[in-house]
Image 1 (tube, one colour):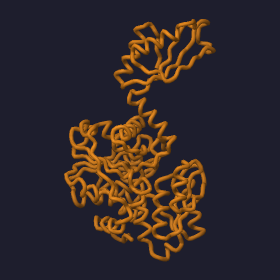
Image 2 (tube, helix red, strand yellow):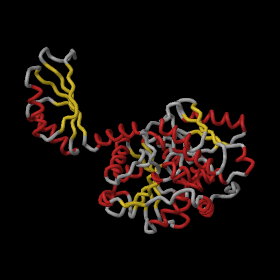
Image 3 (tube, helix red, strand yellow):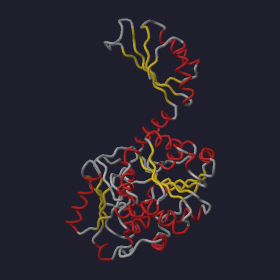
Image 4 (cartoon, one colour):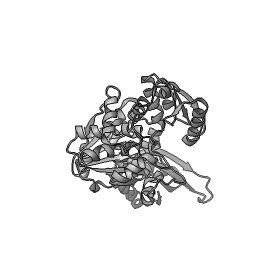
Length: 405
């Protein structure tokens, strides 16, 4: 257990790394030619999406539970999570012979529920958001004496997550910039703690989703500030308030915290799947989203930490569609035709000449805004990028159609 009476140091991270030997995998470091060409210097992907339980969370969870006194372990542990932390706590507790209970929202994805149970935790469904599940977990702890394992706001958790930083320096000693997704801050705080102690010249950059960016205003205020609301597809970094423990470290050691859009997140997930052949959840793809959004802002060699790959198949399907649309691979158009035989065939002929693949066609004939002999057609097309989208639209307008996006 990390001594809470003194500041965390790289020695605490080293101790966690030793405790994790044989438990957490030393995950692969993969080069990305596409991102290297985009950034103009080498870009490597630290693949924590291939870690046990599918994310980095096993590192901090195991370090935390392993550091508990025997009498605390005997009382069991309890956690609240919609996914990654739940699985990390469940596996860590099982490996250490500790009873675990995890409260999850009723809407948690079925694959994550099943995986948490399979790793050995008793799963209880409560509430519709993690905050409600956390309240129930705390009540359970008060009633039973079980120890609450927080996902990011504890010194042992931060030390455990910092082992990612030690591995990065061993695998890519020439690194100049490390880019990390940020929710509550446990991962980036641990990485910064380890890396800045050994290589103070390395730049550590955090990335948050625009709709859940609590760190920029908190850093400006000099204290953790809670957001009124959070909204992002990136559940793994959907946190409305920085943790007190990681916030102090982030404020002292992290060079910058950037934000990325939902479009950038979905495009990054698509890129990881198509170009790197890696399944990555939106939160895990956030560093790649930052590189895509402003490639000139990062001095290389760059290491982007893919923090997790636990994405629900339905979310993956929606996100990929969103990513393809953002990349100009889908185009949706509405236009009006004269409602007569052959009109639709003529339109499809124009699209064939423009080399656009028609995925779906729907008709509206009952809108009061339409003329008596008019029909509105909505088209969903598969295209080849933003330039091709513009070409298709120009071709249709050139053929006399009034096109609305």
